[in-house]
Length: 102
Image (cartoon, rainbow, N blue to C red):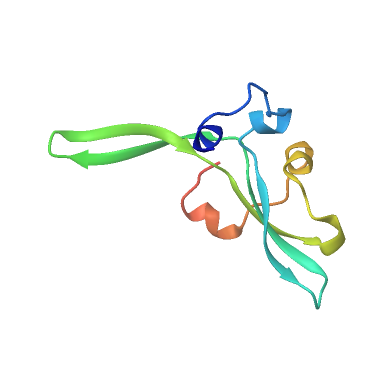
């Protein structure tokens, strides 16, 4: 019985959606307005950070996701697939401009 939990059949469960990092999720449902608050990310972008160290300034490079926050009608919740195909994307929240330069 435990062996069955440790092994998986040799079947590929991936879809094209799984190949993308762009995801969308409902985080709040308002039954009064019949709207949902959705948050989503997009493909990662590079982030460059300048840090002063004891050895002098250093630049570090990493990844950062775009962040989106928007409402949708309750009857039109987005799936990851729909989000990935959506164009144009909604505007990003205004508070992002304080730490992201486009």
